[in-house]
Length: 240
Length: 240
DNA sequence: CATTACCTTAAATTTTCCTTAATTCATCAT
DNA sequence: ATGATGAATTAAGGAAAATTTAAGGTAATG
Image (cartoon, rainbow over the protein chains, first blue to last red):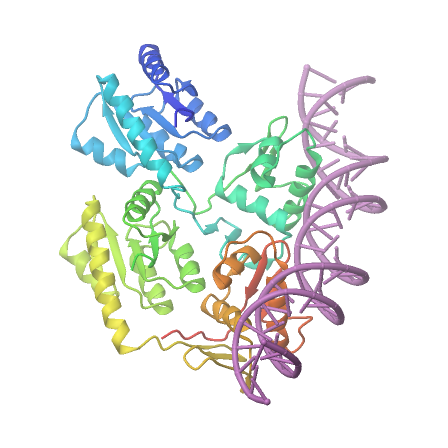
């Protein structure tokens, strides 16, 4: 339990430091911190946390905004930190996918107690599932993961397994940039050692299936030096 | 009751997540989600649900529009979710085939209570009227799960027990993709450790019974790298 | 203009699946 | 009990298809 990966997101250095020391004293050694919602999101995409403490008041994007985005990457419990604590806040926080609500100023012992309690409960429940979406619908591309069927512009196309898995992954994370290494680890589920050719070839195969002109892709675009991104132009699949 | 298949349709990720967690905590483990009416419809066409939660406000097509279309695929109870709660809304909601009406913001406990109540009523009603009479009727294949009789093109064929179970499972879940592992766990009821040969041989036996040419199956097709699928070409599947 | 990152095609390798046959297991009549 | 029968499982060889590797080409970048 003490080896739980915890992420704390707050723009105030003081609070970050306080929570960090409290939790560290209690034996939690695996603590990361972030100052902005963007940083938190990036961290969540690369690492798997067991618990996230998220301040509502953040520069640029508020915690309320970031919460559902983080939810897409993980189903770890998210605790909101806030100054205000009206019932309405709590309700909307809960609606956004929060699991608990801690109001400033914190009682350090209370924070620790709540975290421990939640981790205990959560651990027991083995696999807390997130709402697994089964059908993805973009402008020209339609994926039914129940039947394993893929349609492009209404026509059914056959995909090899690995290419299908790749498409499915992109459908689950549209408009997000992934490096070849990330893709290999997420889709293939194996450690990446720089052999990026495999990914590139599969990207190509996928493009041959879903793009009008695979040489000039419009859905699965490459961002040179960084990776690939599946863009959903006008697809009726708008999260947040 | 807790194994009821539930579908939640809402474009807001947050609400999807909230309802999912609430219901999951209450023991409902079989939950699917969809963001659009189209997706919901696709899901209803491939799978049978016991209850559907449908948001009125949906992108593209409204819940009002989608409801009658879903009604054509199933007679599962449909609950409308809506922000407004004028009497007009309620009236048209029920007229369109809705079974209940839940207004945002929800009280989680109320949602669960209503769902449970409805499922209880529905279950009670359906059990005595039709005592689990299940006859599956596809184009060439007919399975009577009461008598255990299987007909292919009108002719009775004898199936070994395990092969029959396999066929029955496929009849219950047509047009859905299952991996060998899934099939083994669902049909055999034992943990799967990669010994997929058993499943393959049984697939072969089943094909010898139901296919004209077992080497080139038309009903029980294999999707390489992913699994098998029982396709019902236009054949109407009647659960009762 | 050289270097880097990416694209593209084709060949090589591996995986997956099919099929038949052999073996084990269970049932039932003798 | 015991052997016969049929079913379920395991095993093994081969075919087909998918994945990976490799190699040469192209476009962007500094």
